[in-house]
Image 1: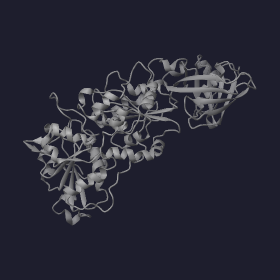
Image 2: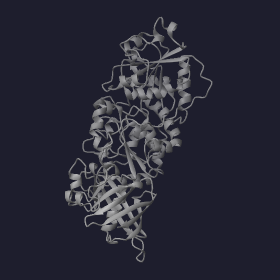
Image 3: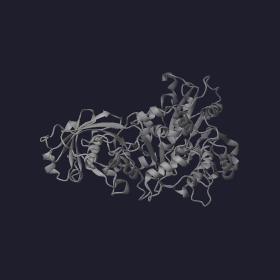
Image 4: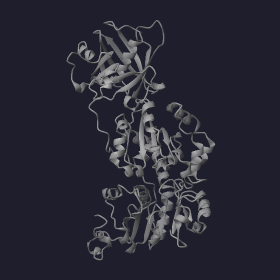
Length: 579
């Protein structure tokens, strides 16, 4: 039902006659926007399985960034009422994860909690203002402290609360961080999350996190972090996932964000909807993190993920907060240095950094304890005995497939770097030869950068962008496209695209037949096929091997080449036969 409709059954005067379960207590969840709603659900998880508790939800109507909130509540079947109706009902307890709205109007006990990794932001324009949620500006109305209890995640926040609103200190409850507890518990299921996200064995996941606002990763003019990650990281070795803040996602509209980022998702970038818990699973699965001053960066750092800052707004961060220390400790992404060396340097240096070790402990001073402490707090205010079963951290769900970029009917073009190494001089042609391939999405490139030196272009001859096949060195024809009209020589495509060196026609098992302009045909078959193998990789390996001059493509020539996808630990073995 919509907020303007009738009250939910349990709240109507004649409700008990029609309701199935008559609860003993009623709780009001106060929703500011989707960001606060997702954290609210983390907190309310302590009531799971308890039929004595009925939860209703209301919207304060106070957020300028509340797009999608109505749909969020509706899609989850959350019983809700208008703000005016909520204030007139005899609820036993209210829980809010934002300080926005007229919370002082709530006539029953209110528990306030943060909607991120503690209290790290400054929203006041007053000079020297403290953290949002820890000062009198956000906690006191007409001389009265509004929340009956103030949930903190770390003991250090008590000190900052004492500085910003000393009269509220008696109401502080250090209860840890339920989200961080979930993330730590989720590390045990890292392999399951990686499979669900589509990572192949040996691939590394880079999570790029963006909060909202002009100084975020997504909003910083010229930062271009997402495109750069796709452009510079080899596609067979890395996957990139963008975790976009709900305020950015729904502030502009989900369609618009997907539309802006379509060239990147078509190049393989993962873009989950932010109201899902996919971002949590992604952090558990991540190998690297590029972040900003959003909570997700702090959570990633707390998990020990090697991290760099793609953007950071120092003025939006509360002095002395963990986020303030994060901004001073993590390296800022350099435009003058290739991206991968910066990530690898973070991986080498950050695990043993003592200052970062201290920072990781600053998110929660009660690790693994949030479910127990929050349940005790809520049931004390509800004046009910806690359930007999132990309070437990809720598991992060395995991501399910969601809206994705449409699957293109053509193969995306890629720039490919290929190096050929021969181990000895007296071996048979091709034996003891290693070809190392790195592929980079062509649509993500803006200029021939250093990482594309000596790269060749592989493209689909039917790519709608005529620039790709017209300048391609290797043309890729997938199986579903059917046989070439002039397959014996490839002359048909050679005439259409005179700059092409070879045409690769896909065959079973991700092999191919490479057709050269002089009529030579080279058959490539994977004798040992790793998960990353494809006919496009085999084609580029054939092109590089022949171009290196290691052996002329004479009929009858046979060779076995080791093929590697960059630094991927698993190698493939390709058998070449020239016909």
